[in-house]
Length: 300
Image (cartoon, rainbow, N blue to C red; front, side, top):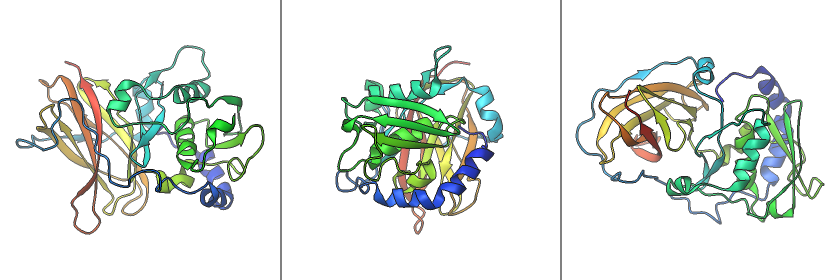
């Protein structure tokens, strides 16, 4: 997820013009269907208010190129959180499996009860099936039956694109419906960059829902923020803030870039906690959207 992919950069540059056409033609965003109020997801037992005094927190800088070398490969389906995409729980990859197809199958299976409890849902219908699938030169070519398409298909498209492009061998996804490039779907390939309107200001890719951690809780994602920073905190089940800090967005203020780091966990912390990542209002600096990810801390 976090490695730099020169091939991906070159491909996206070549697709920019064509992808913009698709971005405007994909039957609009889902604003008419979904509320625009920011969604706050809480772990079981977590209160909405912050209690107590924040203890000193540490943001350990980690080279983005090293993150995937210290975390086992997983497949993470992307669901809809409010009106934008958000990551779900990790599915360990079975041996000798096509990991890209495995991730797609996990997405079509729908969110788990734990993911639903974390405020995640899918807009892909249960009767959606895959008619064809292959990855060629960085493009995942996916053919769905008619059930995939709706009047507002863009959220479903985003779910598929974010789920498959987590792997370095996939740069973009090309869609067909019933074997043909139906309507605006499936004409040029669609990459994450083409879905900025349905990408949250702070997109957390790791930790995943109910991820276990001991000693350090690694986090990463992408963000576009007014000051080029992503505040974060770790909350106990009663809402007490145990750690807090912020990280620089690689790319600077007003530009989407990666943020990567790790929370040095308190030795006594164990059990369910919540990692919170914050986007702030550009004018007032007040907290606006809170991405709350339930995590489980194991004793070191």
